Length: 231
View 1 (cartoon, one colour):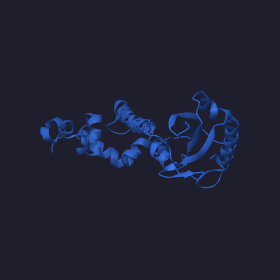
View 2: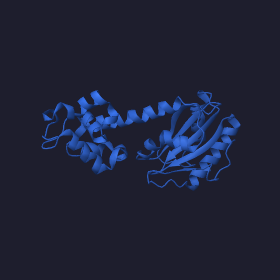
View 3: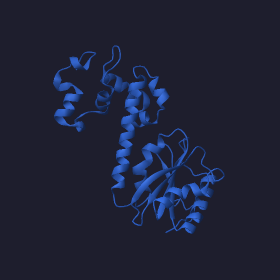
View 4: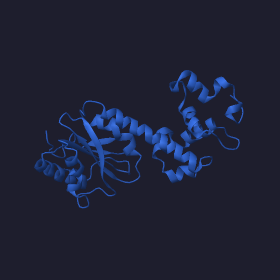
């Protein structure tokens, strides 16, 4: 594969043609990303640009985490390409959530991590969310409770349960992220969780866990024994 333009390559080597002929599984991450980018920059075809982005940002996970503003300022990217990359990654995250919503139930924190860890780790500020569950622990919705500092003084417990009541949820799991990358629960995390468990008991909505995500790691407050949760 030579030349600065992919259209100068042999047709059998071009990513789009190979995808059509052999399927997406036959392409590398760089080739799939190049299809999104469509064009490269001066002296650098789209696959080379994609390889550079993956290398400089630490792979797909790094591209997911990098702020939009920083990505669009990268040489060869700009507004349109940055939007295409972020949109594709967001669709992948939503597909993962949709697939989990079709599954029968959440069995433990590892299921929650499989569903949300990638997205939560990419957030630049703290987000507190609630996974709403039915009687079989099937996911009804994932709702955002608050964005910003997550602590017991600033989060109104009523906000945690508002959508749960509307959905007739019988249980929920709290999740939030630590942008620092360290998922160790803070005293405020523990205090907020205890308040939520107590309020949930009054509303007959079980609070089953609170999971804190960091960079590639998570902590379940239930597994850590920090709070007495509903059974």
